[in-house]
Image (tube, rainbow, N blue to C red):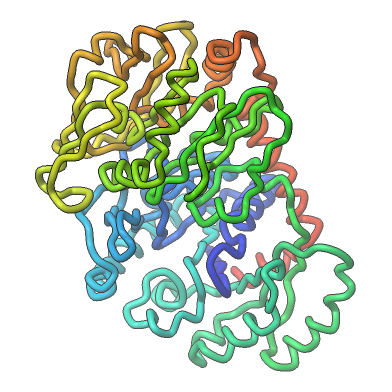
Length: 485
C-alpha cells in the first residue's frame, strides 16, 4: 500500500487544508484515498457514524475523499480543558483527562493502537495521506513521539515538510527543521511545500536554490494564498486569531463571546457564509455589540470555567441588556448548559469539583454526570417544523421544567428548550445551522424576513473542488505520488 506524511515546520502552517485539497485531487484522479492524523489537539471535533469523535479537520478530509468519517482517521484526539491539561480521546472514546506531563509520559503506550488504525485504513484504499501535528522539529517532545517523526519511523512512511511563508522566516524554518531532526529522519524527507504565498512566485526561485544547497531538499510546490479556505470548517481555535470576522455590512449581527475553551465554533460557519449575516467573535476586553440581533453562546470544554469568564468580562451584563432590548439569545451545547440556573460538576470532570450559577434564562440545571453522549441526530424544530441534522457531543445531564417547552424534536424525543417569548433557546445539537431550511427559518424568526441565500453543503463541496484545482495547479502531485510509492 501507499502512504505519505505531511509535517509542518510549525503549527497552523496549513497542513489540514493542503491535505484536504490533495485528498480531493487524488479522488478526482480515480484513486481511493483516506486521511489520517495519528494525534490531534483540537476542541473542534466531529462525531462519526460509529459513535466516536475525531478532529474536525479529519472529518473534512474524509468529505474530500467522499467517504464517511471514521475513528480510525484520528485515533488520538486531545481536547484542551486548561492551559496544562486535556481530555484524552482514543479511537473515538474518552479515556479521561491528563496533564501535559502525564500525557508526555503515557503517549508511547498508544502507538500500537495508532498503528492498528493506520493499517486498517491502508487496507481500504490506494493511498493514505497522513497529517502531522505542530512542528516536525520539536526536539523537546521527540521522545516517544506519536504525532510526527516518531510515527513516520514506526510506520515507515516518507515525509513532505510544509512551511508557511505568510508568517515570515520560511527559509530559516525549513533549513532549521532539517538541521534539528536526526539523520534517519532527514532521509525520510521527500521534499517540501511552501504554503500561503502572496505575490510573484518567481521571486522565490533564489530561495529554492538556497534551501537545496543547505539541505538537499527539493521543492514540490509553492502554493499561493487560497482565500476560500475561510469557507471551510476550521481545525481549532488557533485559526480564530487569523480569520477575518470584520463586519461586511450584513443586516443581521450574530455576536459570539470568545470564551477561553471555545469548542466546535465551526457551528457558526454556515451563518458566517450568509451574505446578510455578520458573525462577530467578541474578544476579551470588548463589550457585546449593542446592535447585535442575536447572541450565541458556543460550545466549551469547560462550561463552569467559561461561565466565570463571561462574568469576569462583564458579558453577563451585556447579555442581560441585550435580552431586555428584545434581542435573541441562543445556547449550543455548553452554551445551552450556561443558560440554565446551575451547572454542577461533583466529580471534577471538567475541572475542580463544585457548582456554578448559570445565567438563569432557562429553568434548567445541568450535572456533569453520565456517559459522554456521541451520536448523529436528525429531526425538526418546533417553531418552524424545519428539518435539522447534526450531532451531539457532550458530558452532562440537563433536567428541569424548561424542557417542557422544547426547541427541537429528534425522532420521538423532544430536546432543548425555548422560553415563552421565543427569544431565548438552546439545545445540545452541534451543526444545527448547517441545515439550509432550518437556517433560513431561524434567520426569518430573528429578523422578520427570509435572509438565507446559501446552500451550505454545496458551498463546502464547491470549495473543496476549487482547492483541488489549486493543488493541481501549484504542486507536483505526480512527484508526491512517486515519493509515496
